[in-house]
Structure formats: structure tokens, C-alpha cells
Image (cartoon, rainbow over all chains, first blue to last red; front, side, top):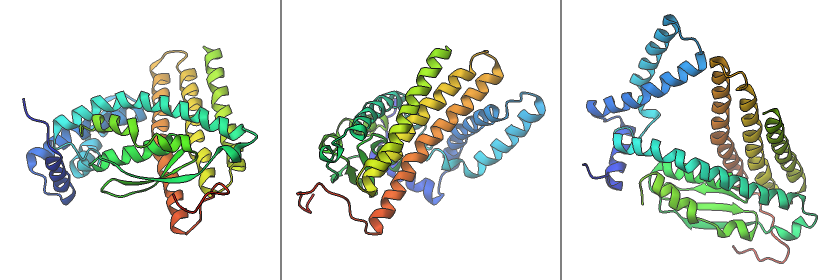
Length: 189
Length: 109
């Protein structure tokens, strides 16, 4: 049983991918993850299952995943990390949907409240996130924007967030549970 | 089945309506983006979800493929909408647009 990659190792792997210095074995992993994903997308979008269309799909998906496979899954050089992401992310999505629904109800209430200008209190919240990788930061920033009451204004690569919150209630919840869950999802806890 | 689809469509429409009213009622640029960017996302999620559900009715392969395509649209929407909202907010900050604050609050925080 291998140890999970440390943040340093993961940084190193991302840097290798970005600079194109990925070793052949790692490239093979990237290919193994990218090709089935593209192929599944091809089958869904084409909807034809005869040999001609399927072989066209195999050829084009193989070409694309050979030349630019490292774009889709930057973590693919660490196959276990990618598998963990695929397993964990679907667990995060229902919770996020539930949160979006709850917070949307709150925003709907604010919208139709006759004394709305007294209830809202827009302000900026600044905090520093402990998430490291770019994917985790992107997911966190987009999750913040989707949960109503808060919009991500600025994210720095180090994890400094500036968030616009519509009222006190929405601003207090940050970073909070969402960050915890994302840290677990991306294996950074 | 049709009843469930209609209910989900109706709820989605309520969120869309809330988004439109919110854009008109909130006091400034930044707070208007809250209903614009998010209620639309949930509204379109509900409405597209209802359409996908409706399409599954004769449960054939073709219909399942159409439903999966609708689901892919939803996935794209959930990626694109917050990103676009963020881009608009960022443009506002860069252009120096001041945020509305409650009367009586200091310039701090």
C-alpha cells in the first residue's frame, strides 16, 4: 500500500505536467484516464453504435488524448489521487446542491421581502483558505459563487479569497464546512 | 409522472422569476449579481432536470441519450455560470465601481 502523495509531491506533479516534462509511464496514465472519458462522451453525443461511427470515435479520441490528454486531468500522473477524486466528487455534489437550494430559498425570501434594503447588508469578507491545489481552489471559488449570498471576487493562487456577501448571515458561514468537505474531496485534509 | 415534471418546472419558474425581480430590486451592481448569477443556475437546473425526466418516459435508448445530453448541458451551466459571474464582479472591481453599503455603515470592512 502506497502512502498518499504529500502536497509537495502533488505540486511537483502539477509542475511537471505544466512544463511538459512528464515521463512516458505517467503519460500512459494520463491516456488511460482521458481516453475512456472522451470515448464515453463521443458515444453519448453521436448515439450511433455501428462499426463505422465507433471506429471514427476511437481514432479521434485516441489522437486527442495522445496530444492533449494532460489538459483534462492534471492529477492523472498520480492515478490513485485521480481515482479518489472520481469517487469523492460525486459525494460532494449532492451536498452542494442541497446547500444551493437552501441558500436560494434565503435569497428568494430577501428578494420578495418588502423591506429588503433594511435586511441586506453587503460587505466584503476576506479570508485565507488552506486548500492548496488549483483544482480545489477553483471548485471552492465556484461553490462560493453558487451558494447565494456570496460571490467570489478574487482568488490568489495562495488561497487568499475576497468574497462579496449580501448579508451578515451569508458572510458568517465562510470558509466553514464547505472548505472542510472540499479538503476531504481533494485529499488535502 | 407528468405531475412531478410540472411541479419541478413550476418551482424552476419561481426561481427564474425571483432572479428577474431580484435584478430589478437590489440596490447596486454587486448585489444584483447575486440573484442574476445564482437563481438562474438553480432555476435552469430544475427546469432542465424536469425536461430530462419528461424525456425518459418511453424508456428507450434514444431517449436516455437525449436525457444524458440535457444533463451535460446542466453540468456546463454549473461550471460556466459562477465563472461568468466571477468575471463580471472582477471587471467591476477593476473598473473601480464602489459597492453599495448600508446607510450609516463606515467605509471599513
